[in-house]
Image 1 (cartoon, rainbow, N blue to C red):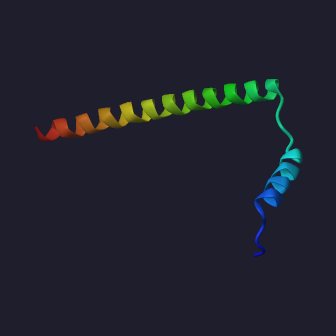
Image 2: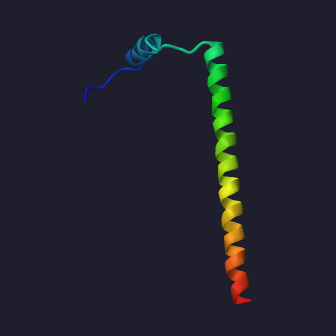
Image 3: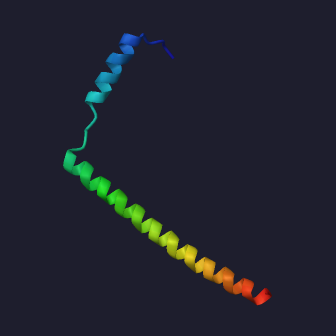
Length: 65
């Protein structure tokens, strides 16, 4: 791999950055909202699963006590 000078590196980074398609403010807001919604759904799912498992373990342990 060839060594690159710091100036050449910066030039290459700027060149590659100019190729990036940056999202608009609206796209960013929509995506952020979707992420928060999916996190909320996942949290509710795991809360439900945890409650069901807790109930099952309590019932199972009540047989032995």
